[in-house]
Amino acid sequence: MSHDDSQGISAANQDIWGKVRERLRAEYGETTFNSWLKNIELEKVTKSHVNMTLPTRFLRDWVINNYALRIRQLWSSEDAQIQSIDIHVKSSAKQLSPRRKPATIGLGEAKSSFTADSNGQDKLEQNAALTAQLDPRFTFDNFVVGKSNELAHAAARRVSDAKDTVPFNPLYLYGGVGLGKTHLMHAIGHAIAANSPDKKVMYLSAEKFMYRFIRALRFKDTMTFKDQFRSVDVLMIDDVQFIAGKDSTQEEFFHTFNALVDQNHQIIISGDRSPTDLEGMEERMRSRLGWGLVADIHPTDYELRLGILQSKVENAKISIEPRILEFLAHRITSNVRELEGALNRVLAYSDLVGRTVTLESTQEVLRDLLRANDRRITIEEIQKRVAEHFNIRMSEMHSARRARAVARPRQVAMYLAKQLTSRSLPEIGRKFGGRDHTTVMHAVRKIDELCEGDQSLSEDIELLKRMLEG
Image (cartoon, rainbow, N blue to C red; front, side, top):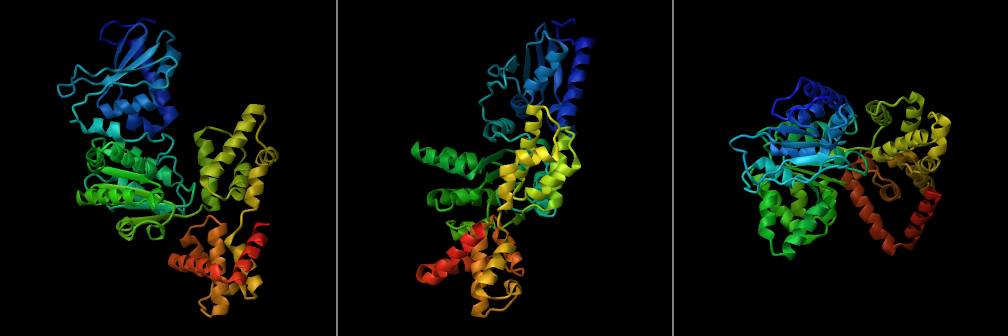
């Protein structure tokens, strides 16, 4: 294999680069390839090094952190003499700077640091510096859409595709644990970075927002903190319920929110409850969180769970019997995270012991998880137990009757549904004759208050809990 010591690239090296590109396209998919890897240009190949360029710093930084090691590995598989890959921004009059150094990915390195310009003028540089590391697995391409999440997915798509206008502000996504909120947040970040690389995007959890604010207070540097957060084009805050009850952090977030809305800059927020249900959050903050579009992600149904499993095995190019996926979709009903974890355990066991995945081996490997899911309490079971205990008909749980002899047991059932299941308040309300989530909230508060002064009711509820959990 011959190598070039000049700027020219030999036909042999062009051929290697063509093979590497096709491998990257096959491994990461067409969308990811077009978004991040398509614009890589081969600049120079020496005896042991390959020099490449990208048109912007943001693209360069992203490729360095996510794909450069794999590029080096693929090239080395074609030519073992290659030891490192150098990636830098394609030179132009605007970008030339004696202070910038290319980033290098050598043997055994997962990623390498880089030196960037510090003039503060380039929005792409600011984006790379401020945007938290997004998980490359969480994109729109591998988000499986079903009835339970179609509104949230459509809204996330609309926001990420918007150029100059803000479709709704804020976009507020909420739902239980492991239903896909964070996946959608990361997918939005990936899409905006690809579609509008000049936009300044910041993604972080509400917990990190609070810690940064506390640090700014400690070091008397709140002006820098304000400038960072109020100058972004898109601000994404995950798990906003974390700042409930934290007054000073809420105050700062309130002003940041208003400043960005006034500038017509996009805000995207996720939480585990709807804005109106965020206890410990100031009323003015709850009101603002509900200004734009509030999208609820419901628990998954069987069809969506099966679709998620099928998508996962297809992307991993794994062969597994359809009946095993159907079994998992029927039995693991809690959330997507636990469902995918169950599949991973089954596949890992098969790989480690060298046996084909069977229904019997699946049941054995997941024995503890299946047992836990079997014990999971349903709202229907709660309604049935409560109706029997208070000697009312099951149909009264869904009726509009307000007589105390019916309304109180119904409130107890709502209270227990909130205590013993992971269902959201709107989901619980729907199971009680299509009632609003505020009715469920009132029931929970009412039973809490009554239990403090009514020992008989308190004992009834403890007995019902033991019966349901046993």
